Amino acid sequence: MAVLAVERSEDLTSLPLISLQGLRGQDRAAFRRVADEIGAAAREIGFFRICDHGIDLDMVEATYKMAERFFALPDETKRQYYIGLSTNHRGYVPFTEKGDYPDEVNRSYEAFDLGLDLPSDDPDYLAGNRVLGPNVWPDLDGFKAMVSQYYARISALGRLVCSALELHLGLPTGAMTGQMTKPISQLRLLHYVRQSATLNHQSVNMGAHTDYECLTLLHTRNKGLQVMTTDGSWIDIPADPNAFVVNIGDMLEAWSNGLLRSTPHRVLNLCPERFSMPYFVAANHDTVIQPFAQLMGKDEQPKYAPFKAGAHLERMLIRDFPYLRNRRQPDISGSLAADAASIQNPFEKRITRS
Image: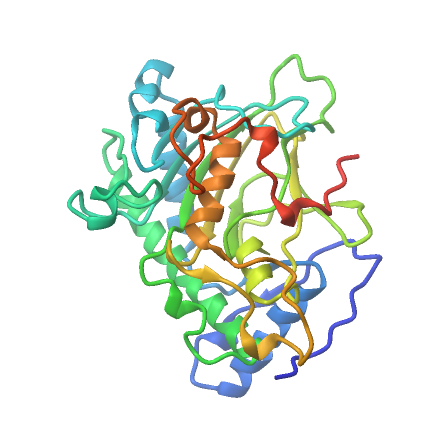
């Protein structure tokens, strides 16, 4: 099935702002119109902003307050929830948990990672799944209730955006969202701190990368995010408390056989302190990511070999988290996890780090 042709611009200097109002009523023409706006942006650069998204800004701010309270705790308290103590990649990520991004000249950030909060008797968790299971919750009054509420709202918003992309691409309803019934989606609470010794405020804090999942919904209070355009240049994305920044991830680029673009991005040390909350919308762990037949031309070949969603995420986490490599557990291919440099992400070949 043919989809709307989009001409990619080489002089993009800002991201489109798309109102989601038309996705929330019964007007199918309005839904289609917004879906095509989203689809055009997803194909041209892979990044866009959304407003009228339906998430109360008081809830967003209350979630930030919980993040602030946690990150203000003493290091010894935060380390009680260290992600390396969990078996399913949940908890506190300290400043010292450094990945392998060569452009992270002045890396300085900490995080708290959460996912779909499954019970401790979940069969996948009991079977040793490394990205599914119960969350780690700090002993902080109101934290679990507030963050869980935000997680529920942001995950519903992610599914709504995916349903719009299904329509834009001419896919059956549920082609993607039907593969998100027990997703490996993650929410990160991020806290960047520019060190006093960092004199170059244009230096990179979080290195250039693509996101590994289907798409990302990001709220940020502060500037610092940069997006790589199709000509390899970098543009600054302003912070807007009323909007979420959305970007396409690796899984959706592969699902669409490259129609949608998983775009590299990075974070600079522009602010002394920066808070952000990315939510990574993913498929189920065992979903095989390969191009939808409806999006393939008669003689067109897949641009990427099929892969399982969970396998791709786990490989990238091994690259990014020393604690996983240090465990020396067999990776998804059955061999021992090697050093980070040996794990390549084919979706990041377009990155320029200048």
